Image 1 (cartoon, helix red, strand yellow):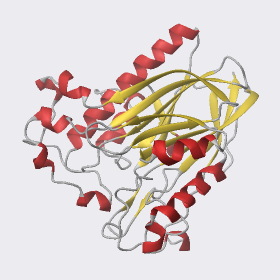
Image 2 (tube, helix red, strand yellow; image 1 turned 180 degrees about the vertical axis):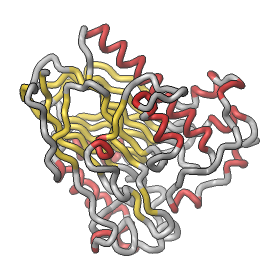
Image 3 (tube, one colour; image 1 turned 30 degrees about the vertical axis):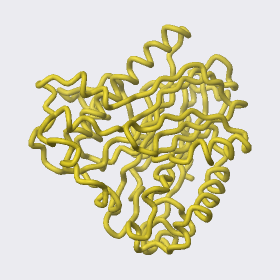
Image 4 (cartoon, helix red, strand yellow; image 1 turned 90 degrees about the horizontal axis):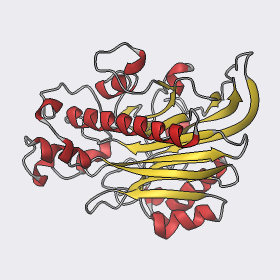
Length: 339
């Protein structure tokens, strides 16, 4: 992992490791959706063990996981046996997956949490929100998503309230770090809607996410009389430079549609976004990110390296026996500092 410098005015007093893992959802892992993958590596008995082994191998203090199903029947207990506590929110409707945050109680105490239900946008919708605008398709989706049900089956896709009801979710959690004491870290985990044709919906979700993060940050700041650091991680189903990605960084760009919180992408700020985080024959590109708030008291010291596109590790596409998801994990080591 590349080393990052820490400024001379920084006093190092602790360290944390944060990891984002995406697409462990078993319900979509079928040979018909992943014909390029060896069928044996898609079976739950084999794949669940591979996922668990990979998660434990990182020894992260915090893990943000999306497309997480089998939470109650598999992940919660097995991760508890490895020293992790967790919080989880399942998607709305009949969806089986959701978002989870796993953390080590010896490293951090959970002091407050909130859930994000993007279906709340239906009630908040006003015509000026520009949902269902004729926006260009400048984002990409994963190959397996093409097999999901036609959006028109859920109602009139021209009705903004139908468009906004996508059953997507997220989590907000505030932690008091054990070392050093009294440092508060906010971790947000989310999974933004997948369809590249519905960039208006994805943008509405991104705006709602940052508004909720900003409100939660203010709540924690007032309650604990501090300036918490903020990490936002997730599968944003958006590529570098598209409308969602640019909005998330807009507070640093002087945009007229400015986000309520200043963020920087850890990978972009330290050598560039990965070549890809999702690798299949139908689509290869970066969809997953870790964002850090401006002026944070945690500083990245190294980033998890991803294999190159010509690596034997990913040849033929994912999942495979080396990587049990069609996404690759991204992550970072941090130093907690006083400036």
